[in-house]
Image (cartoon, rainbow, N blue to C red; front, side, top):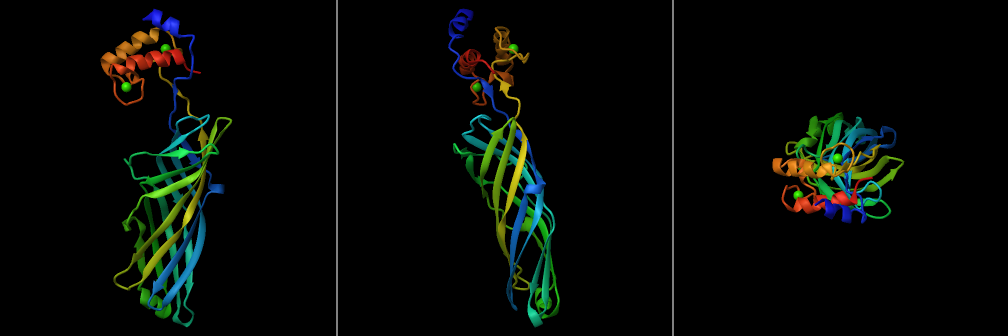
Length: 270
Ligand SMILES: [Ca+2]
Ligand SMILES: [Ca+2]
């Protein structure tokens, strides 16, 4: 065994460090939601737009924090400030709407979704499970207000379709920065008043955080160095079916992880 290792160790080809997820914080000063609301009522159709700053956090993972080729969205929760809309129906009155507590998030327990990162850092992740929440309260005056009959729209009760998340990711000086755009579109009709509320727009979010410390796979005893002592530590991990056993990253502890450990040992960690 040690003979095998010592003859192999000159052939260091790549690092066996494994990427980790990183937590990003949304930069409120550069992140906003832009929402257009269209009301189709029996007294006519009106549209208004508003925007608000966004806060929140994201958990992402890059396969490499030096030259990423894939990005995985593990979690995000994006919260918007309140938005106000005003619809003027002239002599038929006015309608005002307020959106409070709007948020977009990956539902808890959702499977992480991976997309390809191009050499210029742009990426697209499709079929991202998304939950939009928030309350839009609508009140009015005159005939328009009467037609509307004070509606409260709970966005979390609308159909929640997966979304596409597009953006660009950049790693510089140990900081990961991601700029993403999330589409917002949904529509619902109040069966009582016949009013249709259509939402359209997008959230543009810039978030950043530190490049995570990589896990060094062959350092199975976790002492920060790759030494022959890690061999017996790997045997122990194999016998215990411990996480450190999994050296080929397939999520299982099998005899194939032995040759994977040898390969990782020879590759070493930076
Ligand atoms: Ca070690
Ligand atoms: Ca394995």
